[in-house]
Length: 363
Image (tube, rainbow, N blue to C red; front, side, top):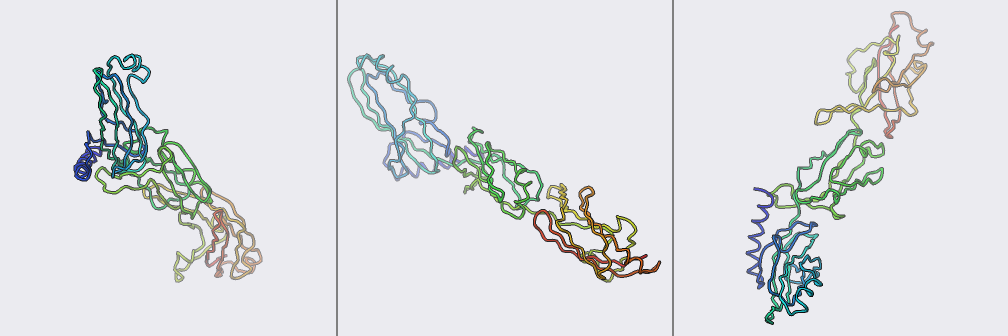
């Protein structure tokens, strides 16, 4: 069942119930959407013929019949000046048609009251009061907003919070709140690329809010949903796991009982390769090259480390540890000696990294 039909049937039931509680002589029912202009009547106009004098005022009432405000947005033909000319100051009759336009922010039950002052061309007078029952609903989202609870730094993603009932894309706006500040945009399509690319947002919570005509949207997720949801979504930004590759055994990955030998004769053997690597739920790879701020490498035995350098190769950050000449000179060809490395550095996101590696170094 479509959204409009479902809500129209619901309104018909509520309207029937409301008639039992109110003594109004209700002319018709109007189905409207919050924050969207609607007309009373919603189809056609009210037309009255053979009028010598005419005046109408309109009020918006709440569900209990209490006045909320006057309605002043009227469309009529002829205009007041044109009507006076056509009737020659009330001596002739003319036909008048009109309708009012209203806008309501909050969903619920309302009434529109018309007070008319009429005089026919024969001099007869009437002062009827006409009521319209108005049922105002929040809109329905056009397509589901399926944001994840978290995203990796550097991902790219966008989504739409457009609704079925709000037609003016220029009236949509959004606000993204993050550690790095606030991002504001126009339209119902939100790009998260900028906020996902700012280092200061890693580890923080991001909030996105959607608006229409400056008011936050509340929407039905589906046509038959009983409850609305606010156009507000939160998620966190995180880093993929830090991955290591290289010739040294990572003590977190390699069992201590496993023998591990290393010949430090080239850069590949001497280097520790680091990268943040992750796979998103939709099977897209995310790669981030860490930056080592003030790297510190110590060893057991202490005289193993000769030189430490950092560089990059593709998506990897390399920490190259060259053995000291004195350590290697003290070994005989064919000998091996157990070495344990402690590697520490701070990355560009402020994370303090400390890892342990081991190998039996051979000559």
